[in-house]
Length: 207
Image 1 (cartoon, rainbow, N blue to C red):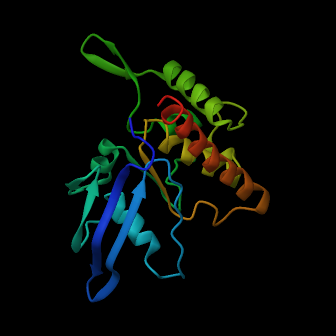
Image 2 (cartoon, rainbow, N blue to C red):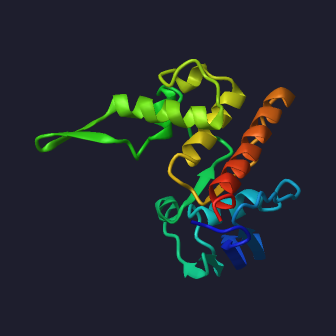
């Protein structure tokens, strides 16, 4: 359990080259438990590149990443997920033809065993999805509703729900409100604030 103000994630002198192009140069960043931190910069400043380095999608050309005080080398997003780092990409990376529940558990689906074979447990996926959406106060018709039927704000909420369904310690969002209408922006910001409040309720109120 992370305590308030604990340093969770730190980037030290992170540099990223793409051929002869310098996308990041000696970037330093600290993220503490319970903190909601915004990274601000012009288009092309390297914000998305930094997020992808932090999430393990890109490897830094120089510098280092530290999680809970220990240096980590992230070979892939799976490595970051195993540490408790989840990423919500700007394009959301959702499968529009799949239901909400299958998107949330994509690649980490609960299964049931029948002899030597494993099958996806669709009933459990639906139950877990409905419980998680309810906890986050995300309103949709059904966990079986296809993502392609949702509004932009609802899709963003589903992407955030997916990132928080597995006890994430750090949730990284790349421009989460960029393509949304004003009303939907407000809902996403409310959801982000609720994540912070839920964290403080779980961690600070018990200490």
